[in-house]
Length: 188
Image: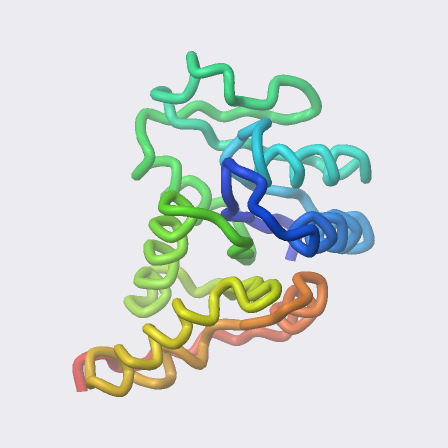
């Protein structure tokens, strides 16, 4: 895995463990000689991952929709920026570039990005691993909801089981190195 796409918040959150895991992720990228693909932001957790990965000397690719170009929220040095027309094209481009996805804590944008690559996984469009960084139980309620979706017959258990859920991002990425996509028949 040479390009890891990270979805995360444009705010920093309230838990020091988030920042610790950002550092672990940056170290993993350095050790693996991998690049970061992300939303191109300089604020919040996006900014923290950018700074941590840049400090490790790893290549960084930021995919930025035109609507954010003039908002002064984009990193400007130490990153290769690619501007795209809109958020949908941004996600599609990230899917094209990435070998794996990491879902760090975040808000609505992070959830939207997660559900996009997750639904693409269900359809076979995305055949790449998805690591959910459930740091300090951040995603417990989301994972419980997804189990309810399975329990009520709207998604096969195998789709939920395809997620790599971890408290430690580096360990999750090590597990992702051995990931093998298995298409599940959603329409049974």
